[in-house]
Image (cartoon, rainbow, N blue to C red; front, side, top):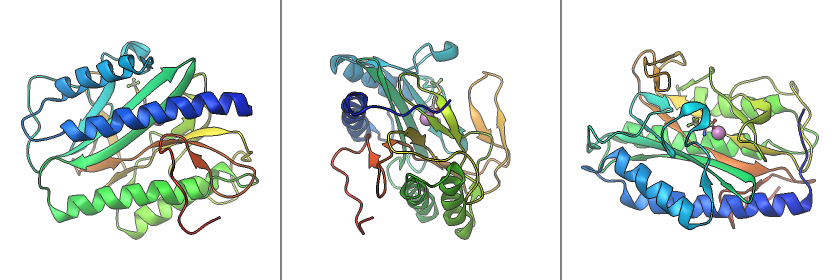
Length: 258
Ligand code: MF3
Ligand code: CO
């Protein structure tokens, strides 16, 4: 069942989204060569709790941390570690979620660690653009497949692979609600979209193939061909007209109007 949130509920999700935006901005500032992902995770947990919220990933199905820290060919769900430091030239995806006053926010980004190769910067930029293309399609009256189609078109136009085994999702009181939001699809297919629906749209885009495998730790997902992968995610709220509000990007205005 896909739920539609009331104006009062959207206010609470807006507050959760704004806090998560601040948390991710502060995390961006501490990413540098020599830093460990465990230290970044500890910092994230501290600022989430100081904001009056709870980290939603911590203990979720036994997950041991407040962020996912996925380096290079790790697509998602990399577990923070203090056994190795971040290296210049790597790319790091940070995924984080929190619950504020009972309402969830979920967002992720990928950055270069220090200076990175131009082709990695391009992967990061195209993955961000894939999010905005997908999110822009998330409008009342359209369908879930329109979102995935928009993401897939831009990714494949650029010669990249769209991860298929993992999807975006509805979000609200729970981190994962209906519907699943794949990053590929056919226009006009899937569930009908309505104002008040809240979705996490999260393209995972690889420089090579779309196939992935899970490591023995039961979490870490890597590309099968070991090609680097970027991830970009926001929590959005659908409007009665025009493109959605991006709850985890407070103040964001769509540039070229509806
Ligand atoms: N943010 C992820 C998602 O979009 C969830 C991370 S899994 C967890 O589904 F176990 F780390 F929480
Ligand atoms: Co998510």
